[in-house]
Amino acid sequence: MFNENRELKIFSGRASRYLGEKIAKELGLELGEVNIQQFSDGEIQPSFTQSVRGDFVFIIQSTFAPADNLMELLLMVDAAYRASAYKIAAVIPYFGYARQDRKDKPRVPIGAKLVANMLHAAGVSRVITMDLHADQIQGFFDMPVDHLFASSVFKPYIEKMGIKDIVVAAPDTGGVKRASVYSGFLHAPLVISYKKRERANQVASLRVIGDVKDKNVILVDDIVDTAGTLSIAAEIMKDMGAKGVYAFISHPVLSGKAYERIEKSALDKLFVTDSIPLKRQSEKIEVLSVSGLFADVIKNVYEQKSISASFVQKSAN
Image (tube, rainbow, N blue to C red; front, side, top):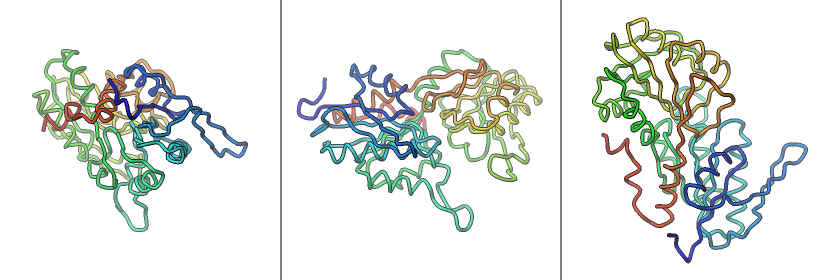
């Protein structure tokens, strides 16, 4: 199955070990062991307990908060590089700092570009990620980027649910492109939510453009953070006569009062991936695994085969 000259080895940071174990199982491999020492002041020192010399190393770690998750990934990459790994691929199911993709006001950083620079400096030769906040972030990297889509998992699940009278909605104008793709492969009308913010994570007003009366609304987005926009959108759509509101959102950041808002909201169900582990369980939240998607791509990258079949979103355009 695998290249005889360059062994494939899978490792994971602590924050994504749950997903790393599932990906390794899909590949029929054991997840490699990493000894991560943490000093009393919080400083991290990872060390590989097996040789990686000449191997193609894949390190799995989502870079959600705290920032130690990103630092741990960088240190693991540096350790593999200094241990003479052949190539190092950073598998980052959720790419943190992606919302800082431009200067939207004076004297602010472009965090996504900074993180891309740090990964390159550490020794990463390839990045495999999913549903970046903005497609153009791929251009921040001076290395190949495999940008996967949760639609590969969500699309067949939506079809399996057999929901009738579907309309697809974007929670804000920034998500129109993503929603239009879902609208295309589900052959459903598109509805748009127009949102204004007073400040970050606080919605001032939201207006729905389109007909949702007697329809089942599929809300799609890349990130659910405080769930403020999502809760307001679901309530407005139910008030406009929607029969059901189902959200399919790739990355469950779910900070602050997100869980309370979701549980009290008009949402019938929120579907997310396991790119980020849930902080707690909720009857309104269901997790769909992307381990098979990442395993397939890792295998094909290692074997130098095409991965275009994994891009459901692109093929739907």
